[in-house]
Amino acid sequence: MQPLAGDALLALWERGATLHPIDRALHVLAYAAPGRDPEALARLPLGVRDALLLAARRATLGDRIEAQDACPACGERIEVALACSALAAGEAPPSPEWPLEAAGYRLRLRPLDSHDAAASAQAGDVAAARALLLARCVVAAEHDGESVPPEALPEAVAAAAAASVAEHDGAAELMLSLACPRCGHAWSSVLDAAGFVWTELAARAQRLMQDVHALARAYGWREADILALSDARRAAYLALATA
Ligand SMILES: [Zn+2]
Image (cartoon, rainbow, N blue to C red; front, side, top):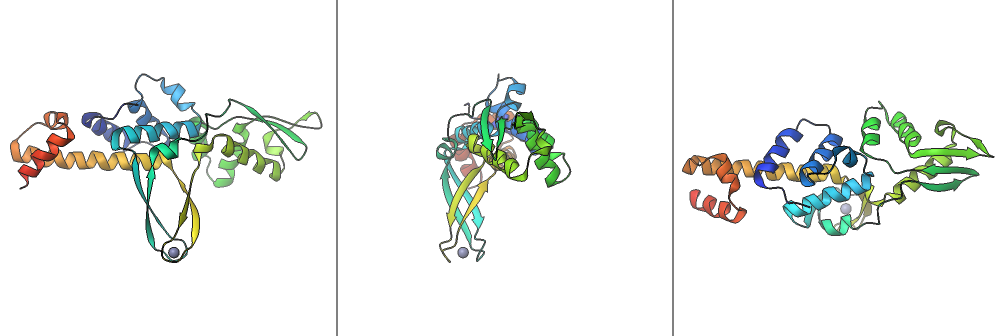
């Protein structure tokens, strides 16, 4: 995975800012993994996509993540230190398809990808989105030798299918186990890897623009020349310019 250089990071931020979050995640991957077919990236299981996004984050901003959350019991703000490598080192990529038996129903399931996520985002409400994702991850279903459409599956079977998809594409839901140092409450929180990585890259792009602004004002240098400086050299000139 290539680190994103200064000019690429600004171009990424500029074009990504107006995109839907799902397109934005694919946009980041297209920059971080140049040469990979965009359609193949869109077809990646969501957990595999998120592992790649975390690898891009690690290559550009380092392995250590400092995340924040609030205790649901007492409201205390807590900071959690995580490592991209530990978050992304989930299980192997899911199989293209796998079987599931639940309550006498025999299903074949597949992982969800960015096309599925984009379709569900336009579904209107949560129930419609859930039905759409179920219809997409259930490749085939039968009961007593008869084929059953996904919308006719009993609630318990639909829930088992959803749980199986989450389990097979493990990294798609990054569960963090947290505990409050003030009141001792323990809870779990789901990290939205795609949203998180974008927020961090966008913050880095904005800090870079502040640096460009300060150096251009101090020395009259061009944006491209300032962005081409190494981080260490840019920081050294900034310290001199603002001393
Ligand atoms: Zn608490």
